[in-house]
Image (cartoon, rainbow, N blue to C red; front, side, top):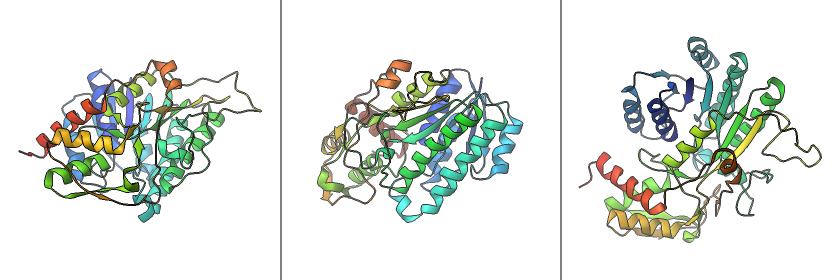
Length: 336
């Protein structure tokens, strides 16, 4: 089977591609290697993939329809896993147009290519950010998500709506994955846990928003990858029991499904920082700040659906995951 992974130079994309290559799949990577954060780590991720003979890479723009079509024309693609996106809640306040270009224009290009080239299954990245102003915990895919608090979240909700349209019109099986704060080696430098680690090691102050009263459903990268892999050969089918009068947003009369993919064990931010300090072996200098626009106070994933469908069961504790991350960080940046 041949699988296209967009965002292959990204954090989740690299780890997923590596796992698929090890399993014997042919993987086509697609990434524009933009400079939203340090491109060196993206290049180093790609180096890990280039060692495999069954890996081919396109450096191209998802928002460029011609470049997307060229990839689909040249490759015999069975499944698409779309992880490419302009990420980051806070950056969406500064550069909103980047999110429309990548997350909306780029996604419609993928949908059109999936339609024209008869793709068997499209799996795409959504986000826990779509829950926005919701406060009922844990977040369930059966809940409505109509009140985003960032443009990033709005684009991810839009992706789910667009995917449903193509599932309805063209019968394309689409699976949306709402990721919950993924962390681990080769992670994104713009994420809080990454910058916390850097600043603690360098003796710099870490900014703790909402006075530290935050909770996140931190999910280790290996668990996320395991969940995605389990879904590849399980394209959604028509739900004949779908209720038109009381519609469940996560399912449909079309071959469409949305899952939460998280740890199902939210961790208080201060506990997270304490665990990070333990593995770094150094206490952080802390500055407590108010809530930032676009942020949410807590995330907590209801993962019953994906557990029933695939047996998905996250096994990595925050203690184990952060130890692995800190060890990687010190090795990668040659911290003594």
